[in-house]
Length: 174
Image 1: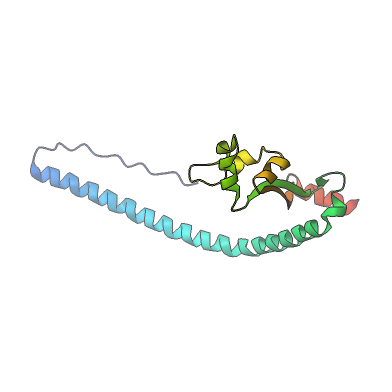
Image 2: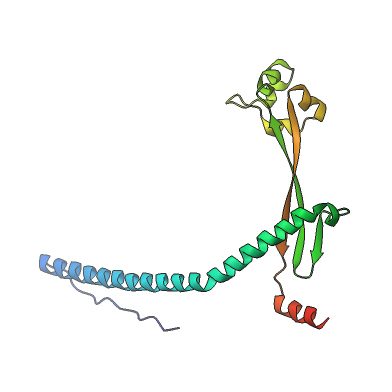
């Protein structure tokens, strides 16, 4: 890395308006030099960014294709893959199913919540059902206000990228 040059300001006795003007001129020149250097640096950054994206894009596209295929495989085969566990570990990462729940409400849920004791806690200010509160309710309580719990399964994967080259070499040998 190049060593930065340090410019030392010469001490100038400012004793007149002409001297003030001269110092202001030197400040303006230094600011112009800074702006020029920053402009050149920005041009270089843009060229590097463009080159980087050109070089990266094939890899990004490749990963997107692999992800699409991997997630489709997981979704298609989830019933036989995840019988005992919700994830499987591999040398290069992990695949699995994340299970999440959400509360679905109907148009009548709000009116029914207003009628039952304790139902007001499940109503938020804009007068819609508070799904965070409803999430703690039992299925029976949810049914009473025309709401239900819906479980969603979402495929996922996680790459273990520590020591990838070594692991690839070992998997080719064994």
